Amino acid sequence: MATAKLQRWWISLRTRWQPYLGIDWKPDDLPSKLQPRRVYLIGNPTWRIAFLCPCGCGSVVELCVLTEADPHWKVAVDDKRRVTLQPSVWKTTDCRSHYFVRRGRIVWA
Ligand SMILES: [Zn+2]
Image (tube, rainbow, N blue to C red; front, side, top):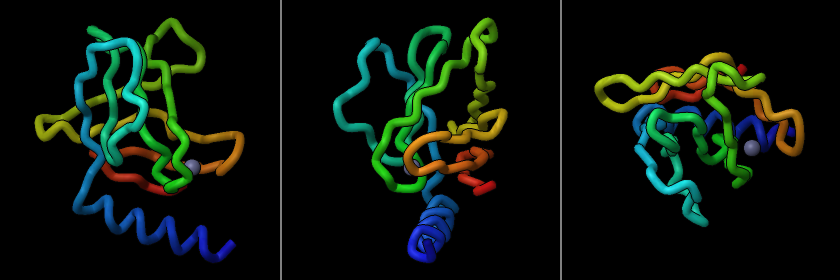
């Protein structure tokens, strides 16, 4: 749908100035409402990350970063706390968003 494309374009534009930043999150339970453009790094060392889907659908994306897990993602946080994820994130249900997170920016696939 054209509206969805437009929305993505707008969101991708916005993330140029407001990147996804990693925050350390100690409790096991996430807050009931996640902050937009925040990546919650759960555990020490981090074993799980969570953030709001960048498409704006409101769903929470949770990814495992343990290398033993399958699938798992590599998460890197630079000195400005901008988050890079590898590989891309592909939601196979609902909004079906497919994107990369590079230095805090959402790059739509
Ligand atoms: Zn979404």
